[in-house]
Amino acid sequence: MSIVDNWKKIKGKMNFEHILDRNTFLAIFMVLIAIISFGLGRLSGLETVNKNIEIEFPKGQEVSAFLGTFATTTPKAPITKTSGNYLASKNGTKYYLPTCASSKRISSKNKIWFDTKSEAESAGYSPAENCKGL
Image (cartoon, rainbow, N blue to C red; front, top):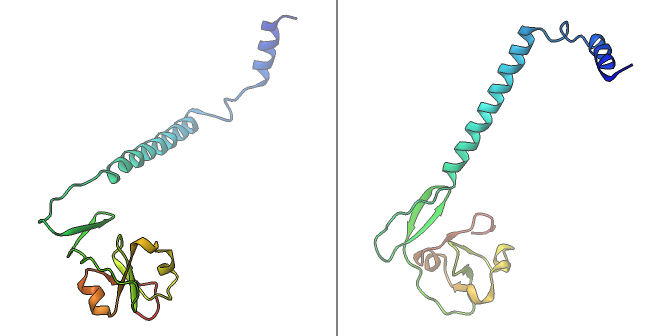
């Protein structure tokens, strides 16, 4: 028995016409095209989310950006205190109580101390939402 004879024998036993008719094939094909089109649309949408936007602001103002939302703040005044009632980071926008967990993560070279809340807020900082007591 040759390979061709074996192939014909196997092919004769595997009759898929009753399982996969033309309408079923078209339905499966259309669903696959829809899934692929949806995936390509999502992929092309991701490229526009990560583009950088440059905006010029008046000199002396600092810009903080998060997910496309821009807010201007006044420049922070340099403060050289080594202790106080409230603590902030030179690189951040929030102030904390010294007992807050987040304040312990601020590097000692970046710590800025304030005596009052109004002093911290006038320097451009806002209260941390995760610090109880502010």
